[in-house]
Length: 341
Image 1 (cartoon, rainbow, N blue to C red):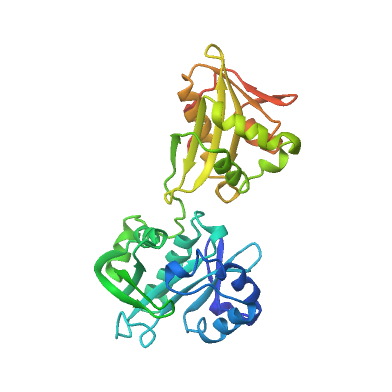
Image 2: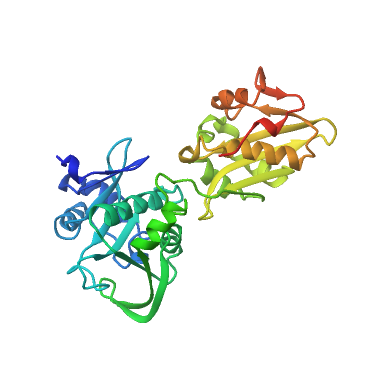
């Protein structure tokens, strides 16, 4: 059992010490060739190899498994590498931050959330004055995490040895000092406490059928389509619908989609509206509806077909819409009473 003193807790996550029983979950995500190599280590080949890594690599004093609160299962790793275990510093009041998370959890704000908490731990609990962090050229996801947490660029090294992969790369090094971290928290900056809200961009964009089907896997929408006409409907929908809105987070991952048609006179008909499960409750659905209404001219009444999303009735009712059979309707919706969080 993990001692409560070894736990770091955020809104959605538990950061705890690794246990050998985590080997299967570690292998599930560490075997993905898109996870390890970009960070400088090869994919795991077996559960036993993952168990050895837990015993001999993820055993540092400040090495933690990233777990969702919902099941406490390891989905990634984060560590503060202390003096003697990093080549970025030789001081006891400085350390290096390293991290990764399984691909199914990319684009959900999980890694920045975990990083913010371990940085708080570094500066407040461990008395660190500086935290160093690096990434290899091309690892844009890691770079974005560091940018979100306030790290500042220091230097670039070419022909850097990557011993576990027997190759050379270009590496970039960033730094966050305690003074910078404190100033950003005080000013409500990127690393402020309990801040997991990311900027969302909504744009008119036509998706391919494959892109939309992949997005549906992150929502409750796809399972409700009649299977016999699912792919036919998707193919027709994405290629012909006049209003196609896509919400993406800061990493460019699709977190919401709205499709609508209009009769160019009185009505806007919303055929599909979905938000990724991990992004529900943040006002994305409302923002998509508002943007669609503005795109349609802002004066039309709204109707929503529920054949593909009957579970969303409570959401539409909060907007003031009324249900009739498989349709929700609203006449002359006024958006001034709604805020997007």
